[in-house]
Length: 306
Image 1 (tube, rainbow, N blue to C red):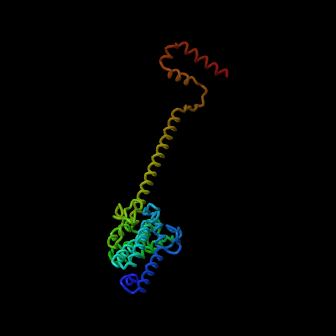
Image 2 (image 1 turned 60 degrees about the vertical axis):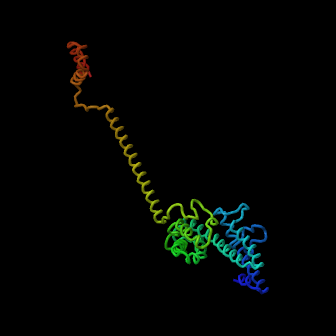
Image 3 (image 1 turned 90 degrees about the vertical axis):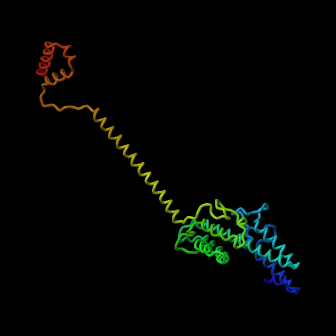
């Protein structure tokens, strides 16, 4: 309010104090670590450094490689200083409103960033990402609470610092949707927020929000189906192997010669006669009765001499 009062005052001392207040605002935005070189350093800890970091993640870096948001804020700071010196209070107020809306951008980007990161963490995680998401969300929640309670509650529940449920329990898409619903009301141009992955920051998620629990259940169902498929395939393979073994054993048993035990007698006349009959009528026709009788007698004589 110091620069506003100084702009409207004709007192030279108050006008000088207003100019100093404007410079302090610029210093707080940029920070002392950035140095004096164009674009600053990589070690900044203020909103200027945060915007540089997020521009690479949300594709909001300009042609120069620097954050578009930073370039816009720096330009407004210079123009505001001139308007303050020239007493253009109306133009100064417009510049202040534009700067305020731009300062939201790196904070919103950080909330969205940690909604993505924290969704991957399990319940009761001690990862520092959980604290980062909580801190950044607390910086924007009061302004969102003033314009949309439902969106504020969604952001609060999913970026809260708690250990009793999954982080980002409603899914990152729910957080993106909640922010998309309030951009216009808090004066933020969604284009300056940028884009990340397959999610449109201006319209919210490309797919409807789903809870982490539903997503986990779907993954579990898929693993169960895969397990059933593997089990059934294994059982079928085992059945085929066992069937082939049985067929092989049966074939070997049928091809194996069968030996009949002897009845204890050395007289093989009956066996010879049986064998002769089994040879068929062809063998009988080639051998006459006298010849057969002669062979039998010779066989008995041989056995008697033995």
